[in-house]
Length: 327
Length: 268
Image (cartoon, one colour):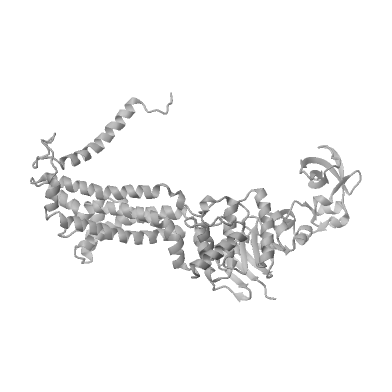
């Protein structure tokens, strides 16, 4: 099967800066794919390489098997939901949504009907006559989504689409986006710096670091089996153990990650340390211990007894939870 | 002691300053209605409307008036086209020496008119260009471009680049993006810049004297008229016309660019 989007050793330099440095990836058709990374890691540049607003300095990009090196953005069957939505402020919501059809020369009646249908799809029926300035952030986001979907793209790109929304709205939109993608069956490529967003929404994700892909895989893969310290650290709040401590805790002398939820506090265990901090999280508490100079966190479920700060405690975990990393 | 209210002395100074600036303008209006035609005596011996009729009937006023309107209109069109293009270039790209070029674009308005005038005059004679309406228009366009440029650059800064990309992303070609997205957001700034440029060109004297041949524009006609003793109030009538033609566009431009929030574009 041809990939929806394929990068072959793609690089993009800005002067001396390698924003994207030798990226290889293949996104399958119908996949919900997340590009995750801190700011400046190259994920947004990768998105812009797909939409055509950036040209690769080297390598090749193909969309459904077609090399798009010489295809301008307006000729690609790809649409984008921009980070700041980029709605046209002088047009009504309906004209915004119908814009993609208008520039294609589709008749007024047909395009306005289609725009209304798209507004229904994003649950904003009857908002067509308003101007973007009269909408809330969440509503603008939906308009941006409807406008990008009206052209029936085969790939939809989303650049931090939920970044500007408050937490509650963000969680609701995550579910909705996921449902929408299932229903439409098109490929979504999603850029985010929020690991929870990436883990909860994506079928697969690529973790970016310094213009390179640090790891690519399913959320379970990346979360439970990080390949490097960077991934372990960035994806979630894992304990990263230096080689010495790994060995002291019964592993090989290599860097390892240990998920806080795999760690129990008990009287006897693999390691002992002093409690330096306790943070209440609702469903449990995060207890941080100092073990041989390294901070190790344990997630204690609610209802279990907590040690006091400064007290001695031991940690215990299933040896298989200790994940040894290559780098 | 610190207070939000101005002291009495400051108020008096401010009012005196304003009167000093604006009383002469009121006097110009007043003398358009005086019955005394040879000198400006105060108070006027009587008031009359007849100078408006006389001015209308004088054949020597119409050619300069039409010339001034023509020059201002064409210089404004040239300025809008070139000013928009240069502001688009300056706000879209970053390159070495950008700040310096920006200064060069602004220079014609900062330079004394005599310098601009002399420079243009020597350039025209070096290139063997005969003085005509077109040399006046060229001279005016040099500073009209700056006005349009300043207005357009400020607007470009507020239009988020995202909406242009969004247009392209949705399938629009360059012309469609210009027509449907850029122009509607830029329009009022260009109109305002154009009106200011028109007003500036309409009453320009210095550069015009250097770049005109035999023709005289309305302000130059007024200058020549002031030294003649006959029918002096006619000049004041023309002054009122000049005032209206320049003040109204400036007022419109002010209202057009005042509440820019609606056209700000993009954003959260």
